[in-house]
Length: 144
Ligand SMILES: [Zn+2]
Ligand SMILES: [Zn+2]
Image (cartoon, rainbow, N blue to C red; front, side, top):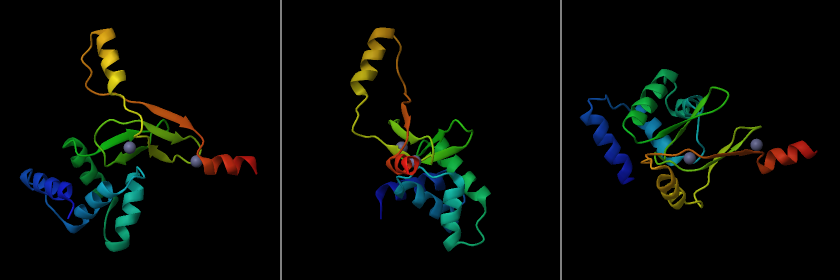
């Protein structure tokens, strides 16, 4: 099993969070996906295995994981939000049309962060960098 999964489950137990198969399923999806799902996306996925699952359970579990610093939440301009199994800040590329979000890991912001700190005298704890545009599929849809 994924060591990170086991580690997080242990931490959830320490916090007296009731571990149910539904909550574990939410955690599993968040750790496995690169798709930055919304709570509704996760809900639809878990419901296939657990038909009695509620959307509130998804929110409760995701919010706990966010508080624990195990996942991050991306607020979109339209007021909706997406969840990301990677808690470390990293650049995102967002399609303005279909709202697809992908990670762009090739870009290291370490040197930029160091430069910002040096030039401003701030200590930098986090950063946020998003690129917006149209994904290849949406470009195609637009041109036809
Ligand atoms: Zn798109
Ligand atoms: Zn991401």
